[in-house]
Length: 289
Image (cartoon, rainbow, N blue to C red; front, side, top):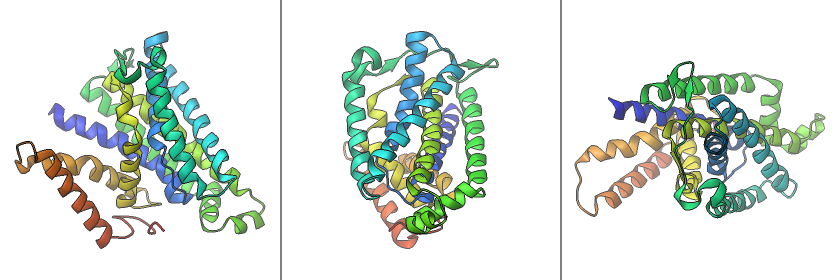
């Protein structure tokens, strides 16, 4: 039962992170390769607050959200003043720089060994580091994230964001700044992703750089494209593919030294087939260009 609960916890966390990425990739139409770094920033801020300062969950959550709100717009302003296409390279650079900083600031982050013993994870008598307690808070966080996504989509800001995706010139003609609108989307995405990172750190009790490396960012982008862009159901479907499919492949009964590699081959083949059959993803509004 604990295994199923842990899988459900991961699904909720990844769905929240993919919803945050959808603000950037889906609604704004911008490709960022640094979402894992934003997610990891929230996790490390919360972990450092817990270990170094003995801070509780809400203290760690607030500081993580603030850190995410600062990190993402900084990335946006640096790249979007050049061009939208520059975001891919700049975000890739940010992701690599972030990973190097986490590894080399060992006195603060624990270096390659990560942070162990992240405690002070009890809220209203519920322990987030327990399977059941963690799932409760992860599900609540996902529900709030979905609500924010729905309200944003129906708001003037959501319409301006879609307009910025289609034509920055049209948005400027309407009296709005394209860069500012996109940076606000980055800020919102950063807060959500960092908040999810905080929950992950407090639940796991241990974090390491390997959980937030470039490959994780690529997996997030792939999962969102498969689930569907600019859709509230798309990130959830993408999270199910990202988390559920590899777990399901474990039950094929494959064994031996080649089993793990064979599972990866099957996983990749299924992903490619899905993209060919459903170019817009499972529930997407449009295909990535």
